[in-house]
Every structure is written in C-alpha cells, then in structure tokens.
Amino acid sequence: MLLPFYACSGNLDDEGDAAEYGVPEGVLRIFADKTEIAADGVEKVTFTVVYGSSDVSDMSGMVISHERGGVVTELPEGKHEFTSTAPGEYVFTATYDYGGKKHTDNSVKVTVRSSGNQMSSGYRQKMIAMQFTSVGCVNCPILAEALKNVQKNYPDMIIPVAFHLDYDVEDPMTLSMNSRFYSRLSDKDDHSLGLPMFAFNFRKSSQPIINEYAKIVSEMELQAELYPPVCGVAVETSYDEGSGKVQIDAKFRSDVAMDARYHIFLLEDGYEYYQAGFDGDEYVHDNVLRYISSDNVLGSKIEQGKVLEPGREYVVSKSVTLDGSWNASKMRVVVAMLCSYDGGETYCSNNANECSIGESADYSYED
Image 1 (tube, rainbow, N blue to C red):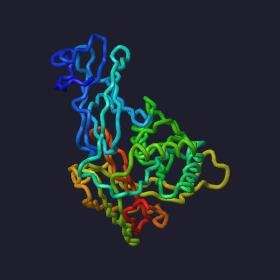
Image 2 (cartoon, one colour):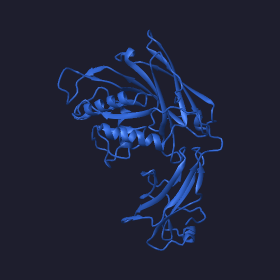
Image 3 (cartoon, rainbow, N blue to C red):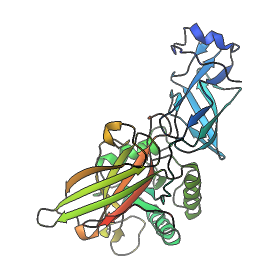
Image 4 (cartoon, rainbow, N blue to C red):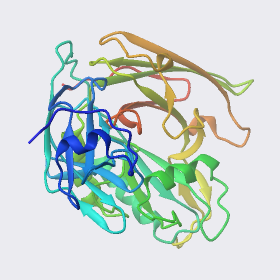
C-alpha cells in the first residue's frame, strides 16, 4: 500500500511527519511519492523509508534495492531517489542496519514508461568490457583470452578496456585512476586487490566474474536486455605525427531527454612486456588504457549537465598529445556515453564507439 509522500527531516530522533505513516515500532517500511515515471532519466521517484516512527530515508545504513527481470540492484547507501531510461516494472524494498539489519515488510512497484517524446533511432549497442588486470596476476591472461573469444563470437558488441593495477610487482601500464574505478566496482569492503576482475559499462556485475567466458556472455546478454541503448556515439579523429597531437571530436545523440556524461579513453594494442602466468617470450598486452579524459569516475558532463534534447547532436572536442613511448599506429580512441539510473549518484555507459587514431567511426545502427 502506498501512502502520500511527506517531506521528512531524516533525523532518527525526530518523529515529526514520519509518525503519519503509522508504521509499528520495530518495523521497517518503504513508501513512494509516485508509482509511475517516464523513461527519460530526468523524472524521478522519491522514496521514504520509515522505521517505527522515524524517517531513516537518508540515514547511514539504509539501502534501497530494486528487482527487475530477476536482477537485484542496490542504490548507493542513503540514496532514496530513482530515475531510469529503461522502461519496465521495478520492485523496490529497503534494508536498514541499526544495531542489526532490518528488512522492509512491504515492497513498492514502480512502472517506468516510455517517454512521450522518446525517439527510437535503433542504435546498435557496444559495451565497455572492463578488464582489471596486472602484470603480476597469474590468472589475468585467462580473462584476456576469454574476452578475445567473446569478441570473435559476438563481433562489434564489446570494447575491451584493460585497467592495469600494481599487484605484487610494479605495473608500468598502471594509471592512478584505474584503482578508483576498481574500488567503485569491487565488492570487497576494504577494496584490497583481487585480480582478475571484470565488469561491464562502469556497473557492478550481477554475479562475480573473474575469467569465465560463459559468465561474461551471460552478463552481456542480461545487460543488453535490462539497459537497451537510448543513445548513439560517433567519433572523428586526426593525428599530427610531428607534434604527436590527436584531435578528437566525440559526438553524442540521445533518444530521450536526459542529462548525460562521457569518458574518452586512449588504448594501445601490441605492447610487449612481462606477464605472470605466461610461459614464453614477452606477453603481448592489448587494450591497454593509456589516457582518460576525466579525473572523475562518473565522467564529464555533456552540455554542462543540462538535459539533452532528443535527436540533437552534441559535440565534445579534445586534444591529446601522445607520450613518446606509445605506438600511435596501434592506438585507438574509445568514447562512452553515460547516463544515470539512480538520480545522478552513479553513471553507467549506455553506448560506446571506437576508431583507430587518425580515423573515424559513425553512429552505429541495428540492421
């Protein structure tokens, strides 16, 4: 049962309006201010979580989860707003850890409907396949091989990106941002390194994935179903060999009115270096992340964070000077367009595209 929404202070000692919900002492329940929102990434539903006579909606230890298509996803702790660009029915519950974890004895169903001004351009989706690895990781080459097989059997569906980390030995391909991505996606409370680790689209996987081909394919198919493409990405680049400067024009279009962000990566293939667990000459490292355009794991804002107009093209230009040790002939530019499903707390890639340095890639559509 849904009751009208009341603005609450969130102070555990302040009964205030929370008492109006009539929740018995020792019981946890969740309420919503609406049960239907548009799939535009802008309209939001706000939840109130009440424990007895206290509003705990934004308290530490309160976590709201939603289930859709058999997959359970948690909102960040204390977050009680939700938006989405994926139509469907979502069932929400909450837990509250206050001297012992309590679970809501009810649930709230929210319908996310197709937006009235939503377009349907038929974009083909390409996913960012995040390979967390290290030259000191014995089992990491198995994950790399599994990703090559996924690419072979599912062409143009994934863009592998190798995030190198220092593990047992110093890794020359490590970037400082890589550990921040790892910490955000790791299930380990202390974020101590456990490698290899895999994730899609800057989103925690629905199951632990280390290097299993079948699990990677299963997660890829699940995310394609739960988070269909609502945007498209195109890339144009030019390269001046004399100066080592790469000019990048990243182009974005959205089918829905939403705020969006982006990441631009430079990757290098064919880098020969030592690798634990590889018996032979120097190992060939591919998809090595060399450059990230943003120092924020959530990406950079498109159009200063304003809501994008459906169908309109937005262009972001970047100029990057290559390190002299990088091999430009084996480098690629990857652009990912990110949107939020939790009111702006996190952003995940909805679509991506890539091209070799000096080349271009147009918007990709389903046949």
